[in-house]
Image (tube, rainbow over all chains, first blue to last red; front, top):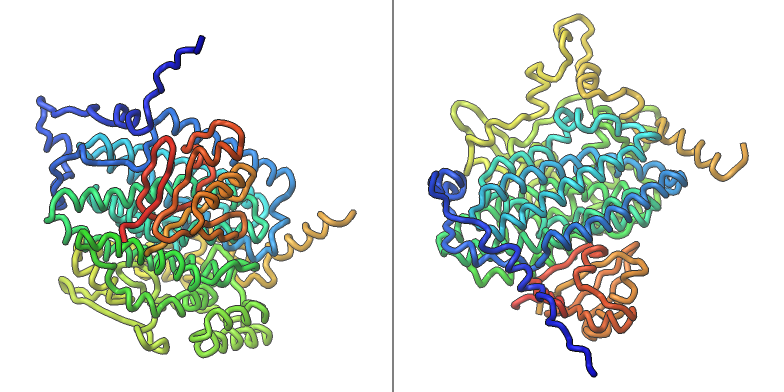
Length: 517
Length: 89
C-alpha cells in the first residue's frame, strides 16, 4: 500500500507572508504620528505598507542558519590565516596599505550602517520594511565585528592599525567616509534608505567589494578575502532591498518622484566621491592588479547602473545628475587621489610610494587618454627627486570641500590641468566646493552642511592639539602636534613605504619563513 | 536587452551551482575572476533547484545560495523552485 503523502510544508512565499504580515497594529493610547514621528516630514506619501514585497523571502529561522554557517566558515579561515602566518603570503608589503585604508576607513562605517538601519526600521509603520531593516541592521553589525576581529591579524605585525576608533574621528582623510555616513544617518528614514540602501548598496557597493575583495584574493590575502566575501554574501540581499525601496516608494504616490530623484542625484554623487579612495586602491595599491578603476567603473556603474536606470525610467526616474562629468573623471580621479596621498604621506596612517616601471606601464596602457599626458611625468619627477633625497612631503594644509570634505584635488570638467573650485556665500561666510555636484547639494541643505567638521578648519582653529599644547610656544611644530593628537607615530605609521618599518619587517619575516635562521 | 549578472565565490559548493546555471541558461556567459565567478546574461537568468539537485545528488534549498553569493543585479523573483533575475527592458 502506498504511504499517504503528507501535505507539503508552506511554500516560501506563504511562509514569508505569515512571518511578516499582520504583526503591527494601529495604536490608540498614542497617535500613530507620535509613535512614528519621522515618517511624514520628508514629504514621502505611503498609502499601503502591505504592498511592500521583499524579494528575498528570508525569515529568521533561515537567517540564523545561513548566517551561522557564514560565521563558522569565516572564523575557520581567520584561524588558518593566523596559524599559518598568512600575512607573509601577500604579494608584497605595499599591499598591506590597502588593507589599512579599508579597515580604518570603511569598516567603522559598517557600524554606522547597523545603527542607521536599526533607527530606520524603528521609524517605519509597515512590518515588511521593518523586518527587512532589522535583518540588514544585524548583517551590518556582523560586518563591523568580523572586520574588527580581522584587524588583529594585521595589527600584530604592521603599523597604522592600532587605533582605528580614535583616528576615525580625527584623521583628516577619514572625515570623508565618516561624514558620508553621518550625513546619511542624520537624514530622515526614507532618505537614509535611498542613500544607503539604494544609491550606495545597489549602485556603488559592487565597486567597493567585488573587485577589491577579488583583488585581495589575487594578492594572496586570505584574511581580507574571507571577511570581504562574508560581508558581501549579505550584500546581494541589501542590494535587492535597496531596489525594492525605490520601487515601493515610487509606486505609492506620484508626488514621491521628485523627492526620490533629488536623493538619487545627491547620494550617487556623494557615494561616487567617497569611492575615489577605492579607485586609488585598485590602480595603485594592489601589487597584482585585476582590473583598472576605469574598467571596474565601466562594468559595475555604466553597464549595470545603466540597465538599472533604464528599468526605473518607467517610474519617471532619470539617471543621476552630473554623469557627464563622472564619465570624463574615470580617466583621472584615481591618479589625482594617489598624488594627494603621496603629497600628504606625513599625515597618513599608511604608506605611499611611486609605482615601479612595470606598474607605470600598466597604468599607461589602462589610461591611454590621460596617464602619460598628465600623471606619469609628475610621478617620474617625484621619483627623481626622492632619489636625490628630496622625497616631496607637502606641509601646507589643503582647502577642503564643504560637502564631501575631500581636498580640492579634482579638475574642471573638460580641463584636467585646471583645479575645479566653486563657492557659495551663505550668511556672511564663504563656503568652498570641489564640484558643481557638491555645491548644489550644499545649496539644497545649507543649514546641514555649514555644521561640517572639516579637519583642516579644525586644525587652524586650534582644535586638533592635545590638551596643554601651546601653539604660541617658541618652536611649535604644528604637524607634530596634530600627529600626536591623531595618535599617529611619526616615522612608523607615516611617510614613504620605501625605508618603512613595515617594509623592513616584512622582508625579514618572509626570509625567515623560507629559510632556517 | 540589458544584462543581469550573478556572482558567486569559487569553491566546491558553487561548482555544481555554476554548472547548473550555465546548463539552464545557454545564453549566459561565465566570467572567471580571482576567487569568484561572475555569470552575465542578457535579459534574464534563472537558477533552478531541480538542475542543481540532479548534479549534487541531494536536496537543495535555493536559499543556500546566500552562503556563497557575492552580488547580483536585476529584479529578483524567488520561489521554492527557481530564482530569476531580470530587467524589464
